[in-house]
Structure formats: structure tokens, C-alpha cells
Image (cartoon, rainbow, N blue to C red):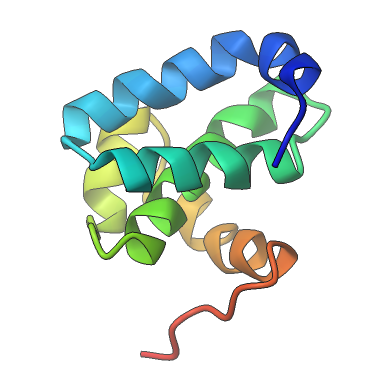
Length: 102
């Protein structure tokens, strides 16, 4: 769980996450998980934040059994699919979750 300070500091990014989640029609559980994953390790560089946001959405959707394709999430978050592919497993591992092995 993250502090209110974290949520305020990254409010703009969490709003972007919600907008992308709206486009994907994600469940509230997937949105909540994605936000927690994003706040777990927000990168310093703004250019990396959007890719982490997208990877968080993808991973959150998997955790909540509300899976979306990497391509769909990439389009909704305006990043490349490769940006998601290279980050989502690390996000899950940092959260203490084991990524699927398919």
C-alpha cells in the first residue's frame, strides 16, 4: 500500500493510467492492481514513466484475470508493445508475484 503523498506526487500519471484503463474497459480490481504496481517503483525519467504505466496496466490485468493483449494495452497507453514486453515481468517480481510461465 502506498501513501497519499505518493498518490499526490504522481497524480498526473495515475490519471493517465485511469484513462488508458477506461479505453481498455478494465475491472476495478485490475485498475487498482495496476496503480499499485506503478507506484511500487516509479522511474525518475518522465519518458520511462509512460512505459512503466503501460506495463503496470498489462500486469494488473493479468493478476486480476482481466487480461488484455500487450498490443491492446500499448495502443491504449500510447507506447510500443516492446515497452510493455520488456517491463511487465520485472514489475510482478518486484511486487513479490510470480509471472505466468506460458
